[in-house]
Every structure is written in structure tokens, then in C-alpha cells.
Length: 315
Image 1 (tube, rainbow, N blue to C red):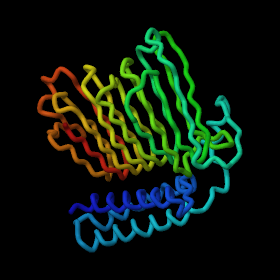
Image 2 (spheres, rainbow, N blue to C red; image 1 turned 180 degrees about the horizontal axis):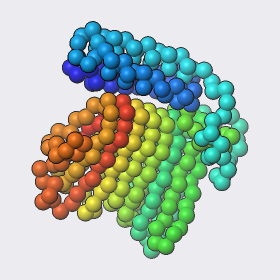
Image 3 (cartoon, rainbow, N blue to C red; image 1 turned 90 degrees about the vertical axis):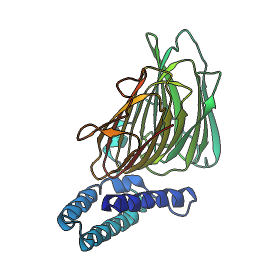
Image 4 (cartoon, one colour; image 1 turned 60 degrees about the vertical axis):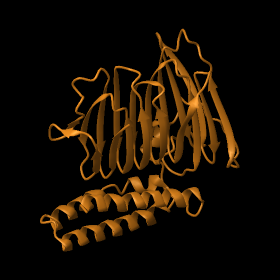
């Protein structure tokens, strides 16, 4: 087995284990306390280059040993509450409605809804941000959008803006002080979307999970920018062109696309693992399906990640 797959597997086990322990309230893990130690991944990459140039067993053992030690260090630091507010908190403060409530919010359910106006909702931009949250698409709705939140911490808002014939919906998670939350977690958000508009979905999050089956929706673009996350995304073929852009740090990304659509993948993924079954490599970083040039509908995928797993399956 290739060393990069082993290292990726260890990292995903670490991230998944932390999220699981956090969801069951076994530990309190502060992802914000970990981000400032991101140079450890440069150390891991450097050790891998120095000691595994000839792909020897000793070199592989050293690389894996250093990785385990560094993850143990991050696990220890992540359980220490952050001492200072970071610049992200300052930049995201203000211009957002804050709902100051008491701290006893665990298990509370919040419901959001935006009515459908078919004359003004032909194109919709959906912006989603938050951390430590599980996002899932539950199906369709007669409204433009609905969101049901099982909240354990933080505040949530849904805002709408209108520009010409395009609506912009912004669904945001914040902590009680008005900061965009990249740490703590356990929230569950279930979305329902209307099938009529053309959707552009933009997600920005720290750690969390996303499970969106979008095959029955007109998805013009899906963009994700996040840290330690698990993504399971399915897109359909209801539009001639669909763009998918995923930028991650440490993530497990599974993307499902229709077999009758032509697809091109551009992948700049460092030490990441890639599984593009049914694709032909056409360049250093590009892959295409056999029907890419002849298919009426096309999907363009751009992957950019560090130590992640990227899979693309055709259904």
C-alpha cells in the first residue's frame, strides 16, 4: 500500500475520532487552538521527503511515527481552550443580527424558512458558513428554502438579498459573542430546497460534515472552502454546465456524478489520495471521462487540498 494512502488514513481516523468523541461529549475540542499549529504538516511533509526518498520500510516507519507524534500533539493542544480571540473573529464581527440568549441551548430546535416568489427566484445564490456542524439535504420544499437546526451551541441566521433577478440567501452560524464559529460543534442542520430555481451553492466552514444529494436540482455551481471536513456530494445533469470547486485542508471528499455527463477534473492535491475511477489522465493535473468531448452536458471539477482523500464516482 502506498505511504500517502496510509498517512491519509491515519489523519482521517484522527479527525473522525475527534469529531466522534466531541459529538458524544467525551471531550471538548477547540479547532481554533489547533489551526495556529498548521506548520506541523510542513514538518510531516519534510520528514516524508527526507526519509522516504527510496520508499524504504525504515523511511516509511519514520514518516508514520512522526505523523502519529504530531497528531498526538495536536490532540493535546486541541483540548485547551483558546486564550485569545483571533483575527477571523474580529473580521466577522458586526453587520450580522445577533440573538443574545442564555447558554442553556443544547438540544434546542430552530426553524428557518424563506417563501418562494417564482418571479424573483429564478437564480439563487446560497451561502452557508459555520463550524462543527453537520449539514444534510433532506429533499424539496414548496418554499424557496427551509432549514431545521438541532442546536447545541451558537446562533444561526438566515438573510436574503435581492439583485436584479438573482436572490442571495446567507445562512450563517455564529457563537454568542458574534463571532463566526470554527470550533466546538455538535449542531445538525437539515435543509430543504425548491427545485424550480437555478442554484449556486457556496459553503465555508471549519470542521464538519456535508451530505447533499443534488441530482434533482438545477445546480450551476457548488463551491466548498473548508478545513477538516467530510463531504458526500451528488450532482445531476439538469443543466448544460455544472462547476464544482472544493478547497480543503484535511478532508474526505466523495463526489458522485452522472455517467452520461462529460467531466474534466483539475486536481492540485499535494499529498492527498485520489480515486478517479473511469477517468483518463490527460495532463499532469487533469483527468477526463471518455465522453468528455461528445457529451451534451459537462461537469468541471477543481480540487485543491493538502492531506485529503478525493473520490469521484460515476453513477
